[in-house]
Amino acid sequence: MPVSDELLARTRKLETGAVVELLESVYPSIHRIAYALTGTAKEARLVLVSVVRNSITVMPKWRTGALPDNWFYHHTLLASRSVARPAPDPQADPLVQAAAIDDPGYVAFIRALRKLPAQQAEAFILNHGERLNARLLGVAMDCSMDAAANHLRAADSALQEVSGGSLATYTATLARAYTSLTPPPDSIHPVVQMQVKGVLYPRRLKRALRLLAWLVLLCGIGFALWHWRAEIARLMPTSNPL
Image (cartoon, rainbow, N blue to C red; front, side, top):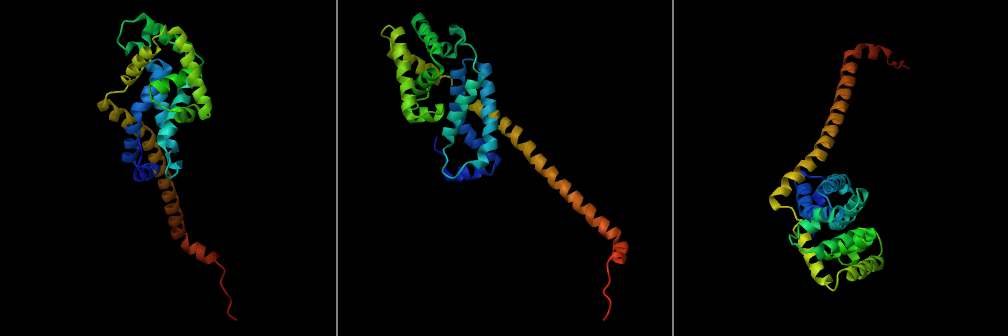
């Protein structure tokens, strides 16, 4: 979703409310991407925590007019790649479970999708699930728009061969299953708030302790100067009258 300049400015200052608001706006998307790409709830949680916490550390570096969605698309995909595991059992795959249908053909379709080269599978899932166009696929996948389009075409071609003429039907089923991976709205705020506090509070505590240490040092120097003022005065050179 578009982020206003005002919200972005407050986010760059790491104002707690602004950081929470921005993260809540992108959380549904990064949750869907992480869950769909990793294929397991456990790995998806690792991705989500990593992306959310890392985003907070880089927010002060975002320029005016930045597009946070693009950052989250890209880094959620990278984090998902970093925890990549062998494809899950098709029956346990979230894109199968969330479809809630008993269709061996669709299960075989998801199995074939998981066996595609990684970038082809990413392009297919993000295009048909998250509705990213070729330009945004390139942003997410860190490649050119043409390269992303080529990965998508290759995935479409490969899956057409195993779908028995049902590619459109299976793709529509995947899109519905993908959408159902969106977390319940009332579950988002507690998760985001906990992660924000986990990053911002230690940073602020460290800053406060550092400031306190400087104040203690300055007070100590001031007290020492006052306590030894007579001795210091005797050691100070005096000017001789002409």
